[in-house]
Image (cartoon, rainbow, N blue to C red; front, side, top):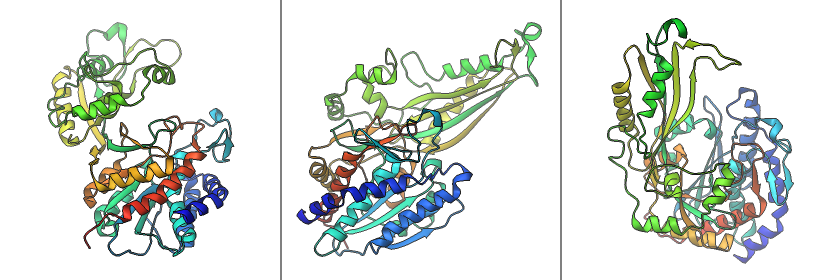
Length: 460
């Protein structure tokens, strides 16, 4: 790897300049005023692949483009699919940024810009590592075939990539998927994420009287939808944090003693965690640690409530409607359809007379687990040790990346979830950042990963 290492050192500044150039493009996928910018970002990514002589195509969709590229096949070596996204979240609120979100600024070893860690910086590490192999290696070739899928709709649900994956899975055929769109465990402590929770989102809508009523004249004579809403939602969770919907825990795979011991051994400071969040105490499902609750147990959380009057002063009414948006984080093996049936059954059961109930289901994705004993995971561990100078720990992630589950199920392969970011990178928030040292370590780890994976024998 000496030639590669020399190349990485020589072009260190160029790699940073390229990242800055990409971060300047305001590729906000959810806002129609940025359509041209999203297209510009797709073109920028495509040019990166074209400069490496990869077979490159920009796939048009009814939404934003998908960039696909691949290097030549290598007989006897695995085929690796690399997924990432070039779209970003809206930068609002702008007044909370210390520097403009699309004018990248380096401060204290970090680069600040929208998309720095989610996912432009992390995604780019896997392109630059391929560049190092091709331009910095004597034979100018990669040791295995890489296929890239870089989309522009991850922040809005990846609808068109899901459709493409279902209609043409052969196009993405591979032996393993590599994704870097998550975090290390802590500064200086890299990690391999081996599990993701899934998600199921709901909106409960309650309707009572045909219009808002005077609470003095009608209060106590009709069912108040807001009162009903609070009682119904309270019925979903007991005082021990257990969700009461029928069958909710039927398919939950318990954490093994080994997993619990591994999580307990992580250097997690609960007091610092509380200070970071600005809370005075933690709470959740009884019998489980904070990390277990965050990463490996299912949840139900209210996301927002709407009803009645919320303006200045008071308005004494019985509101005619009430609604709540809530979501469940699901662990592997839980079926979102079964979960929805159980929740609907319980809410119907506790809905009081005089109230019409509607439960709307949306945005579902199952959880997933990776076999940590697989040779692909072993290869990733070895590569990260070389790139970061330290062995990674194994963690789960409480959030959901729906396209990961789709890739794994449709292609019947495992994913390597390798985060180069940090937990305090302000993802989706003002002052998003990415540590430049980790950017370069990520490139080096990725370059080593291609060699480590190429040594795994596969059937041809």
